[in-house]
Image 1 (tube, rainbow, N blue to C red):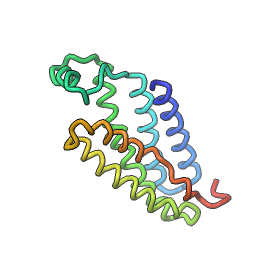
Image 2: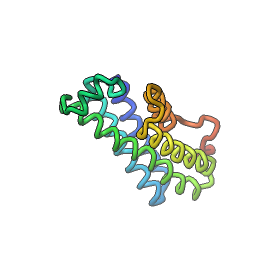
Image 3: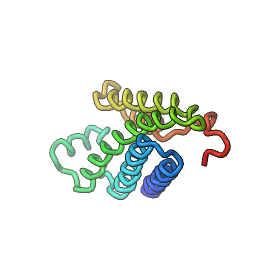
Image 4: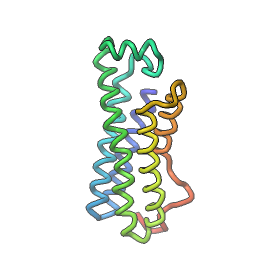
Length: 158
């Protein structure tokens, strides 16, 4: 898991650098900054391990009582920043994609990703799914880091 988090973070930062260097719009710069924040956060969250899963009642009680390590608290707090950055980034980048003919096919996908990510985050936070809430979290994260392989910028886009 640690390696996966760190590599996903490195890849997210690399994506941000590529987008910022290819798309020269203010919204692309802002979206790229959000991706850098998420990427660095992913690396931090990967290195700051949870003590246990707060989806389990015994662990949730430990969290509520403040009986978890500092790295557990860092992981959870950084995760919120990551989630918010990964929701905002595609919404902001959708504006840049819409301004460039080569990237325009990614605009709708980015908007759907951001809005669906927001809806899933709300669902995860209010936790109506009970024991299924861990699955909601995995779906939420999967939506935010997935790529639509059918929709790619046209040749010569960088």
